[in-house]
Length: 488
Image 1 (cartoon, rainbow, N blue to C red):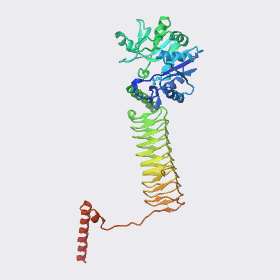
Image 2: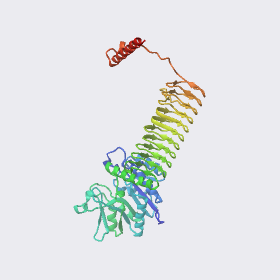
Image 3: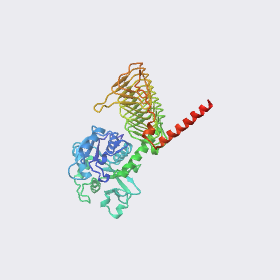
Image 4: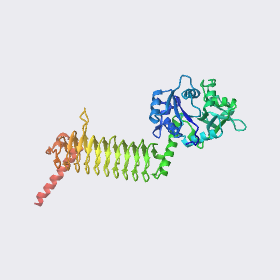
């Protein structure tokens, strides 16, 4: 995005454990908007068209490297050694760029909200000033916990001081270091080799390079971020939640401006990889997660979660939980439906109330209206399954498929014991347990004669409310019979 032709390398710092997260998951792998923190940083970095992107790792090295490769396969992994500190991390990264002569942008893997446009402006300001280093700063009402940018009387940057090393006067400074820097590569190489570990943490601070550059009479600048909140890093779960909220607000607003109606942005969560067409309506308490795509005219919610789903034009999804499902145009789903992975609902189809589906294709115009489980099943076009339909797909060893042809209508409370096929146009009676294939056009019944055992309640449940009700009924019947005899 920068207009300059000078080469750019990006170094992403992702070696820390993040102890304040109190988590077994490395801090930079905690997700917001469906993407790990470091994934957001890499995405913004690539938009700058750098010559190289290097990611410095150490804690949970393999897990972090795997996540980096999934986001940016061309990024170079650099392993930090036992010497702690951001200064050492950048020093090792420079060793992986032995012939590079340009500008080095240093980003933190836990600062996910900085957009490429902000970074491009930082680089342009750095080059316009021919600075040896330019720091991204932010002004906060409460700067507790952040490194302070210390300036002299004329506003020139003197140094960056971490809070644990700051004097009382320095602690009162509200301009903080956002952990993002642009360095002239040659100046950075010279000064970073001189950085020591004489500080409260015993670490090699990258921030010490600023003071060394100043001592060497090389110009250092600071550029304030237009959005202070976007420049802040994530250090604990509170800040993680706040970053997620800010990112979601940004994402929701983007889709609203693209023509989607999102009735309650505060209760609607949309992952960054989701795609929403114009004239989609999203009702409150809905979650559009992963790579979900929603076509124009669809209505989602309220109280629905779609993860990695595809929703067709003018479909309606109400109070539904769906994962890796395809919902056709003009189809209806819900309320209280559960679509598991592999569900494919055809155009104009219906999955209704209290229905669970899994690894099943339901054809065009076909309906599974209510109280059913459909697993490992292929259903043809214009089928109607009665209430309480169950495809018994598991025999305790293996999953089997049920196949139902076109124009099949089934009775209520049917069980289809897979593997079984129901031919085109076939019918089934209420309560049928279908264990054998049903030919096209046939009626399948499994009916046992009804047997009534007279007097069972009086004999087996004496003294109960049911027995008393029977006695009253018999007395009433006897009186009615007597009345009819007198009339006769």
